[in-house]
Structures are given as structure tokens and as C-alpha cells.
Amino acid sequence: MAAWTLNEIERLSALSEADRTFQMTEEAFRTFYELTSRPVWLYLARITGDRRLADDLLQEAYYRFLRTTTTFESDDHRRNYLFRIATNLANDHRRRPLIRAVPVEDAEVGPAATESADQAARRIDLTRAMSQLKPRERSLLWLAYAQGASHEEIAARLGLKRSSLKTLLFRARRQLISRLGSTSGKAGRS
Image 1 (tube, helix red, strand yellow):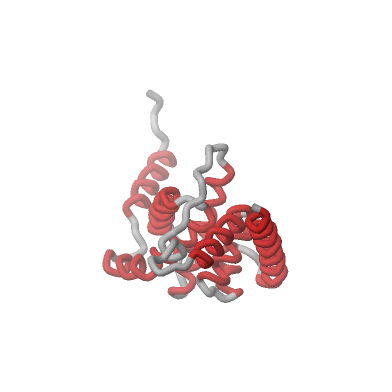
Image 2 (cartoon, rainbow, N blue to C red):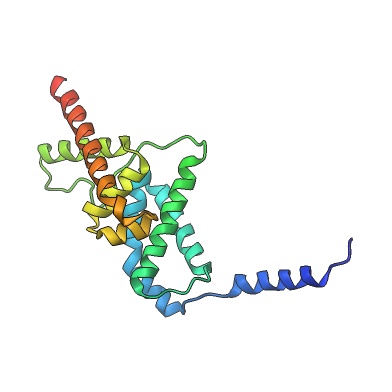
């Protein structure tokens, strides 16, 4: 076994201390989690199309969030940072060559007991159309229209420039409309 140098020992002790250091108290984390877990999970479920994967990514996002040494200026900054982590995790997962699960609907956009057949058909068409979009397009549309995030929030959460956001949202809406048109056209011919 080779002798350890002083730099290696210092680095090792710094890493072990970093593993134990959290930036939030347990109570502050519980409050933050209660406020953000559902929106982040819905976001992940929509952009990945897989509830179980959304559960896993949510857990990993909070783990990475807790391990960060970033100093946050505000609650919005903290929330945007969490969404950015979640987005990066979803993108990393998408890049892996794995077999993809069939898209599933999350509870908030899933079928309601009082839903009519027409509403159910539109919901299914929307789910199919969204699953055909690129991940960034799904992210943009979900944040803008399902969660009502402002352009500043979307830009911060996805790491985009605010100046390009309107164009990207326009293109994503146009793609969704195109997919919805082709989806409803197929249903009408059957």
C-alpha cells in the first residue's frame, strides 16, 4: 500500500465532511419539500412519461439538492435550482440507451370519475401528442401552461436565455398543435 500524502488526506477529509454537511435544517427541508415535491414530480412525470421514473428522479433531485453547497438568494432561487437539477436528471436519463416505458398519465391529468368520453379522448390525444414532442418542448409547455411559471422562472429552471424563450415556446406550441392535428385526424379516419 502506497503512503498517503498530506494533500490526499486533506482532500479525503474534505470529501467526508462535505458528505455530512447539509444547507437546510430538517424543518426547513420538510417545508420546502411539502411546497415543491408535487409540482416537481408532476413535471418529471410529464416530461419523462413514466411515473416510476419520476419517483426515482424526484428522490435523486432532492438528494443532489441537499448535497449542494450553493448559497440561495431566495426561495424562488432555491426552487429554480431544484427544477434545474430535475431537468438535468431527466435529460441524463433520456440520453442513456434504455428501453422506454409506455407513457403513463399522472394523477392530476389522469381520468376523473366524471369525465365524459369526449374529454377522455381529448386527454388521450394530448398525452400522445406530448409524448411525441422533444423533451425540451414538453418541459417548456408543461412549465408554462400546466404550472403557470413565468418566462423568468422557466428560463431559470431550464437554464435557457429569457430572450429565446418566447421563440422556443412558440415553436413548441406549433409542434404540439401539429401533433394534435395528426392525432385527431387519425382518430377521425378510424
